[in-house]
Image 1 (cartoon, helix red, strand yellow):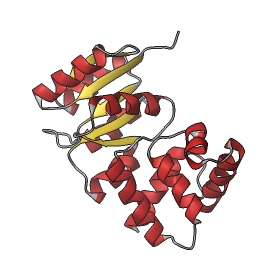
Image 2: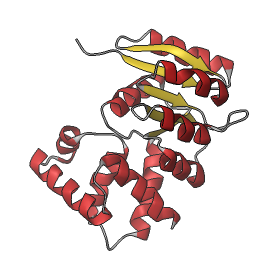
Image 3: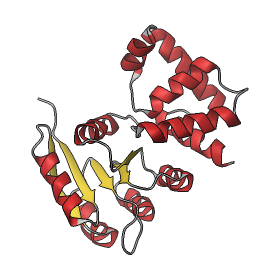
Length: 208
């Protein structure tokens, strides 16, 4: 039987926090035992029983969600952080990924997609809302048009959506071996070694 994914929520809006808790607890394979309306309380209590995934808002009273990820990541290096926010500006995206977030969703994301993103990030993916992924890839393409090929840019777009080798191969109608070969080239050109680092590098090149 697949292990239940433990999720914690840090969100200052009571209704959103309560709704997300109900959705997670009411979905097979997920549980939400901890929720906080600020990062200060999370920093004091969350590490005692580290969750698998934290859904983190950015605009919080006191310590921001971005700073909260940085501080909590030091206490819980094995926990993945998935930003769930209304902030869609480049600075928020860039800073979130730089401090350790491995996914970035907007709050208008449907509940089913949020659950899928939690599962994907728990499996090593880097899920992002489609509009965020398009911005990252488009900006990266514009700044690095001579670095990656068109196919590699396309692979990177799917990577930003948190898709694995098998899904990418099926969508692009190519073999898994070909997908792995493309990833090898992407990692080499970007001088990274993981999917999360590839997404970070894409954002970083946009800022530079």
